[in-house]
Image 1 (cartoon, rainbow, N blue to C red):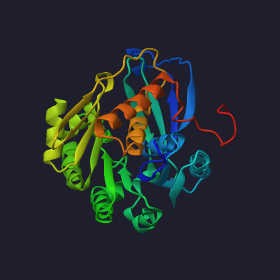
Image 2: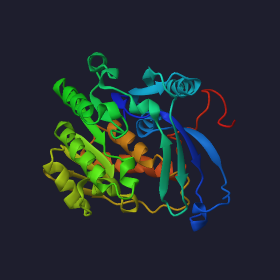
Image 3: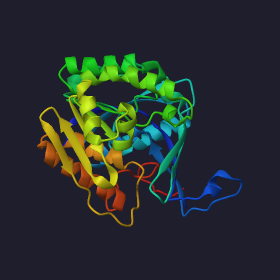
Length: 319
């Protein structure tokens, strides 16, 4: 994978992460549950993908919003320290935080407050300046979280990027409204609105559960077909223990997963996959999927540190 200029737009926040928590109904009751470790990391799908691109020696411009506070400046210093070219719009709010809970049955849940990302606007991303750098790909991560860009700003950003010759991607990650019981109407309305961005995307990314909810179709093949019908150029599906797959107008590709034991890292595996996919643009699609799956597996095994823990660059990981 050779260095190549990319642009990523998405969330930047502090993640407070846990090692795997025993899956138990006691978590919903008064009490306390011990875990091996709790630590801090840069958070947000966009930030994770940008960090992974940088640690893979790729060149990336990362566009986000931060609060006018020390936490936002600290996160930017860290990202710059690992090689990300930062374009952070400073907003008069607090920089966001997220608690990333991971259970030992491989389920995850994020509890987040992201006031900075909510007020990111399209004008915070200078496409003309990006074009001058030779940037060839714009990846829109976390499209659900920027209230002032949803959905018109996202659609306009992707459309304008295509008009100046860039490839584009969007990650249809989990919309927090999908977790609210009894709010299916709002979820479906938001999905219907974001569908308008798909005709301006070269690639749509997401895991099987996310894309299944987005389309209302559970079979990955039919789900991918629906996204192509709605205008997506190609669909890249992360399928967990079933591997990964791609769908284009010319056919389907499936890559099986390697057996994994002793998983060390699960949070961010999809972002690592996407970072490798963005960097492997010169490979045939099947080889590109294999390279991306290999990077995600290395991350999960803990054999490669694509998402370093938060620290002041040059210092130890511990606080």
